[in-house]
Amino acid sequence: MAYKYGKKTDEIDVQVNSNTLYADLLYQHGDFSKALSILRDNLKTDFEFDKLALANTYLTMSNCFEGLKQWDSAYTYFKKYSTGSESLLQEAANKNIADAEAVYQNRQKNLLISTKNIELKNAAKQKLYLFIALSLVLLIALLLFFIYRNKRNTAKILDEKNKTLATLNSDLHQANQTKAKLFSIIGHDLRSPINQVHQFLKLQQLNPNALSEQDKAKLNQKIQTATGSLLETMEDLLLWSKTQMNEFTAKPQTFNLYETLLPVQHLAQLNIDAHNIQLQNQIPQNILVNTDVQFLQTIYRNLLQNAIKATPQGGQIMVSAQQNEQTLLTIFNTGEAFTQQQFEAYLNTEANSQSLHGLGLRLVQELAEKINAKVVFAAKENGTEVTVVLG
Image (cartoon, rainbow, N blue to C red; front, side, top):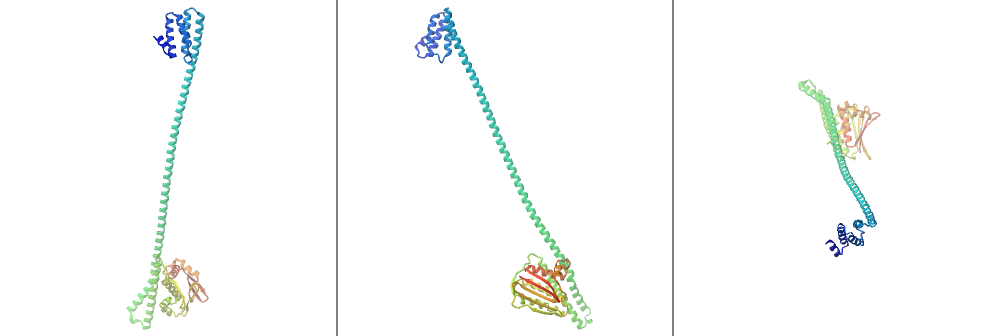
């Protein structure tokens, strides 16, 4: 049936396979000649792509010739079978080697791919670790920056507080010194005139008839001098206390110099007359100045009082002024000379700052500084000249 089907079909492979099966069947039944006839037909077919079928055909033909006792032909076809088999075996071996090599290469490629994948994974991990490390470094840097900034701000705040505290301590120390000076001056200079007034009044009260009219007049003169001194001292103390306050500032205004200083001279006139001093006022009546009135009057009053105290009985005091780019107010008195060095020494000596005389000079200097004026003492041949330079 297979042989008949192979005859009818147009497919060469099917025909060859059916002929080969039929020839094998004939060989097995001993019909060697017919089997050889069919196999010779197969040899007419191209076996380029089926070497195994060709080798099997040669083997069957060799067996058929062996059955016919044709040994030469049998050997010839067996040799062809052997050659074909060797070729097939070589091809199979080559194919196996090629397949093995292909498998090996595939394994190498897979191993290389795996290695590359591992390297890529390691590189990705390294990148991740590097990113995390950089992030941590950046975070630490930010934390250090914030810590440094906070420490710097804290140090700045502490420094400002320390400066403020130092300023407060300095102000407190200065206030304590001012208070000590104030109490020292009160105890030293106010107590003496008050005690004199108290003693004079007590003497008059206890034994009024024991004093003559002339003694009473002298006593009244002493009481007036003591109370005047007390009043001047209290005014100096009050004004000096104000100068120690930062809020005590000058309030400049324009005024006539002669008219402003004349009332100060009138208040000192009793003291001038008591010392038999001749006062000459040579201030021009047309000079205008711009400064603080109260400050300048206090400066003039203290300098005039010092001049009166320094001038001997029957001496002279001369007040003058001149105005160019600056206004110069000058007070000259006869008597013992008083120099600029002595003036500065009084200002720098703590003991003098705690007495009425030292307080008056210190008050003159501090008020002069507040109105941008300058006080200059100069020793003359027969006395002292002090000049107030007004800007």
